[in-house]
Image (cartoon, rainbow, N blue to C red; front, side, top):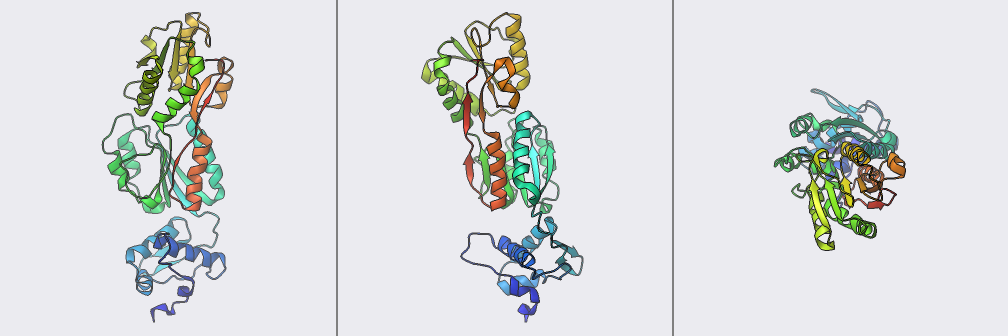
Length: 344
């Protein structure tokens, strides 16, 4: 008798499929709408009915209905159940996007991410300013409203409980950007940089030009959100290739000598560095070298061209969107490039 509800003829679950059962139910309903089999205001079978008919847990059915509700396809009335709210399937995803800060290269990630998703998604975008408390607060809201949670996880302090907080999130909804957290468990998406290996590879490509200088310095501010793996890779390169390396925490107090090469990570440090070199009447690219992290459109024009080492931020945004659109949970390492220009 349970299967007499007219909607059941359009629902199906393939026990051999790797797709989660709640996604199979949701996709079956979406297909029935697309095929014109279900119309606006059609009443859905109850959670208990679907659970019994397909021998699946109530939570599985409830999860499917909540997913469809979060993208606006279903609505519910207390005591009466769920019904088809609309049949416009253009917008299938609702995304919570959390960035640690705003910057030029973060804008590149956002723009490529949003462009690839197009009209298929709505994005709620928040910036938590690398503050763990604010980050945790943003994740305390009703996450059932979202089909995906996309996080760029960088923090000013070395918080031990970041992984614990992220591990509470539904992994089928989770997409990590820029940094892959090794202690986050489960099957989730990650589009990430290999910070240690990336700087080693880039400096090896620049080695011929670096040999014209005496000391390689990296400006790495203390108490910053930048990954420590960058310093590990920098130290490894200097040790294995015979370079005199130095970690500079404060560029304002650093003595600049002819024969120095500076790697800057933070844009504000780049401004201070150029000012100090100019005040000493040293020639950039001849007396002192500069390598700047993160390619942006302006860097090809600054000082007739700044040498950069940078991940492919367009690729990062596009791959994150593709993971969502194709419902995949791959771990993708983003390409990292050296772009040689006259500053080195």
